[in-house]
Length: 460
Image (cartoon, rainbow, N blue to C red; front, top):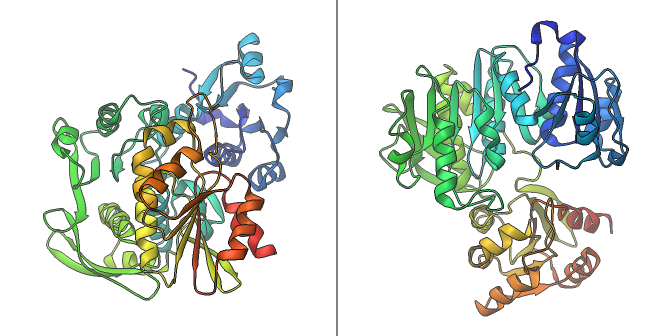
C-alpha cells in the first residue's frame, strides 16, 4: 500500500476519482490545506467541487476520458469505483499507485494525537456532528470529517488543530477496518449493506474487528443495548464504556420528556453523577446518540456545562428530520432514513411533532436492501398514516433481483396500510398538492434524491 509522506506533503500530487463525494471532498480539502497538489474527477459539478476548484483543484467532469495529470503520485478511489473505470485503468497502465479512500483516511488519522471514530449502522452523522459541536463550542478546535452537512462548520469537513480528529466511520466494504482510532464509538449493529455482508453475523464480526483496532490505552464507547454485547467486547484490552436508555450503563438516560416539537429532555447518569440535558433534535434515538456524545466528551474532559449548552444548541445536520418549510398549511420535513430501523425512529419522532396526518413519501435505496428487508420496511412504514412510494433509487446497483417499489406497495396493502405507488416525482407532487391539507405533516424520506420533492413543492 502507498504511504503518504506527510513530512513532505508539499511535493505530493494526488488525484481523487469521485472527488465530489462527501468524504472524498473533505480529504481533498485537507490535503490541499496541508500543501498537496490536488486533482480529481466526478460526474457533475456541485457545491463541494466548486469549493475545491476555488481552492485550486483541477477537476474533470467526464470520467470516460481517463484524465489523470502527468505529475500524479497517487490515485485515491472509493469502494464504489469499479476496476474498469477509465481512470483506474489509466493509473494501472502508467504504474501510478492506487489507494482507497479508507486507506488514505486511516493514514490521516495517524497524524492526530486523539483520533475519534464514530461507527454504527445508524446515527453516525448525527453523533459525529454532536461531538464536533461540543468540542467546537468548548474551544477544543477539532478537525472533523462528517458524512453530512453540519451548518455550524459550513459543510462536511472542518480543519482544526492536529490534536483532535473526529470522524464518521462507515462499515460498508469494511472501510472502517483501515482506521486507527484512539477512541471509538459503536452506536448500534443492524443488518444492512447486504450486497456486501453475508448476514448479521458477518456484520457483527466486522464491528468486532473494528473494536479490536483500539490500542490498550484506547476506549470503546458502545451501546449497552446491543444484543450479545459480550461477544463484541470479550477479547478487548482497551477500556469499555457502555451507554443506553434505562439503567445499568456507564451513561444511562432516564426521565425522558418531550416539548411541543418532540424535542427530548432527559437525565444522564454518568459514573454516579446525574446531569440534566435538553436537545433541539427530535426522538428517543437522539437521546441515545447524545449519550454516546456525552461519554466521548467526558473522556476528553469537557465540562458538563459546556456539553449541556452545546447539545441544546445543536439543531441537527442536513437531511436529518430537517424542516424544509410549509406549503398550503402543511409542514414539509426531509429525512435521510433508508433502513427500517431508521424509518421507525423517524416516524416515532414524528408522532410527537405537531400534525393531523403523517404523510411519508419514501424512496427505497438499492434493490438489494429493499429485497432483503422487505417485510421490515413494510412494518416500519406502517407507522405513517399515508405512504407514497417512489421508484427505487438504484445508487450503485442495477435491477437484477426482480424487486420494485410496487412489491413493497403490495406488502403495505396486505397489512392494511394506506399506500400508493407513483413512479414519477411529478405525479407524487401533484397528488400531494391535491390531498395534503392544513395541519398535515409531510416527510420526504430516503438516501436518494427524494429531497427534491419537498423542495419542488415549496417553489410551486
